[in-house]
Length: 115
Image (tube, helix red, strand yellow):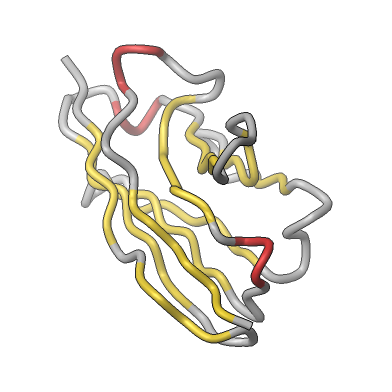
């Protein structure tokens, strides 16, 4: 059984930064490829960053150069450092395995970027 709890969202001005955290339960976290997803109002959920069990990362073009995904397997936590935020980054952010597992979706954390 895996539970994922996201935190760290908030309201920030354009150009600002936030660091999201995703705390996982379960003993197999270290072997999972993990990702950060986001869903903006009236849009489909999209995958913005991934990190493999070995630490290799990949990013959507829209966030490349601004977002950094990392993980701490000892703490069973995945992070998303978001810099130079833009209003179009406004969304609910979720973490999950890659590909996403339906029963693992959590409540997410709201990120709102004002212009």
